Every structure is written in structure tokens, then in C-alpha cells.
Length: 323
Image 1 (cartoon, rainbow, N blue to C red):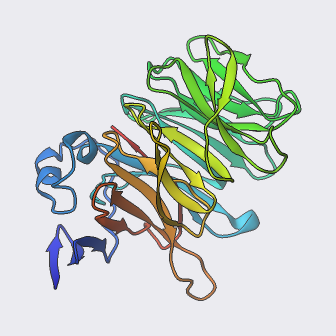
Image 2: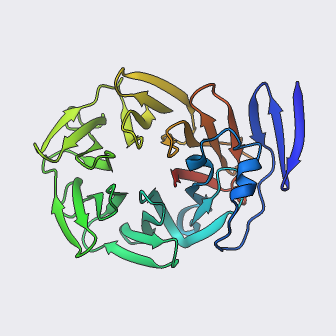
């Protein structure tokens, strides 16, 4: 049976337990509003833990190709409302990452004919701060649990390695020094280790490793073949990642993998603050040669899902769910 209803201008169709947003939500001006009551009663998010439904999803939307590429960084509620434009440039924006308290976003920006640099956006002041620039390409920033440091990958030394930046004084230290490619770091919730991607076991075949700060040693996390873009849940029990071409979530204690689907974009899943939901982009059918994608939000238990359209039919990428 199919039930159709309208909530705050969004057409919602429920079919066999699955919600689908059929039209994009309206874009609201950048402002701090208290939407707690509306979020709590929205049928899309009513079953979510409060920490999830009151959080925000940051993502990148791309329009155009080559020198005409325009990248926009947006923040949106999990029900598709209150879309806010945070940054935009003629070039590329990569891999936004929330601080644990949800007040800051770290991401890389690459203007035309320039290497990527890392910025931090403060959601309270709307200020952008360049934190990593200079020689090399700087990507995949991730906040420490206390918000005082950033992990990131850089080619400053010629090879892609993992660095840690102390935000208070800008001091940076190199953590990996092997002659392979080390990228996409992400802290464990206790701050004592981080997961990252390396092809040190076989060139061109990335695998996921965990680096321990105390021992300064790395251990392979068992996955089946190609694995990249890891993110640990806030309780440390699950890992969202790219499993081959599938957005996936692994239960670390058992190694059980839940493949959520091929995104068509080789993009990973990202977990909600509670770890009960995942968000990932899914490529839409092409129209007039133009690619577009939507954000899929899926419950890990039961598989209920719905989609949020991109603002203007562009390519939605790199969603990440913060508090």
C-alpha cells in the first residue's frame, strides 16, 4: 500500500516501509532557529534518536565541469529542512568533517590551478579560517574528540602521509613516514588511535589500518579487498566506509558487513551521531547528459530509508552527519 502526504512543502511517499522525498525542500536563509518541535514531529525523523534528528548533515554539491566547476558547501537538517549555504567557490570542496560538538566544520578547498588547502568554518560566527596551506596538497581533515587537533593527509614531504595539527598554535607533526600512500584519517572516539587508508601492502590496493598513538604502530583491519574512507561511530563499535564500490558499515567486534548499496559515485557511508543511521549519496538517472545525485538516509536496523534531493539538481557528495 502507498500513502502520500505533504509535510512542510515536502511530498513524502511511504511504500512498504520506505520513505522517499520526491521534491527538494525549500532553501531557507542562513539563521539560527529553534526547530526542535518541528523536527520532533516530522514523520521522516520521528523514529530517530534525538541526537540524530536535532543534528545537521553537511555535504558538497557540484555544478558544471572543468574550469566551470562550482562547488557549494551546505548544511541541512536530517528531515531535509533549513538548507544553509556555508561556502562556495569556482573549483572543488572536499570531505567536510564536523567537530564533536557540531560547532565547526573542517574541509579542503581547491581553487582553479591551486592545490587543496584546509579551512575550518565556525557555525556560530560564520567565519572561515585557513589552517593548513603552503606546499603540497592537504586533504581529509578530521577533528580530534576534544576539538583541539586535526588529522589530515598531505604531500608536503613529497609523499601522501598523515599529519596532526594542534589548532591552538598551528604546530603540525608527521605521523606516518612509510614510502606508500597514507590518506583519509579519522580519530577513534577515545582519541587514542585513528583509522586511515594505505596501499602499503599492495600498490593501488587500499586497505584500512588503525594507528595507535601510544605504540606508534598500525594494525590492519580485516576487510574484503578494496576498502577506503573509514569513519568510526561515536561508541567505537561500528565503522562506515567504502567497501569496493559499496557504501558499507562494519560491526568491528564481529567483522559483519552491511552493504548499503552502490552509490554510482564511489562514495562511503557516514554514520549518524547515534550510530543507528547512515547517510550516503546516490547518483540519479542522467537527464540531458547531466549527472545528479541525492542523499540517502537509511536506518541500519530494518533498512527504512528516504532521500533528500540536491538543491538544484547538482551532484551531491561527501555527506557527514554532526550533532
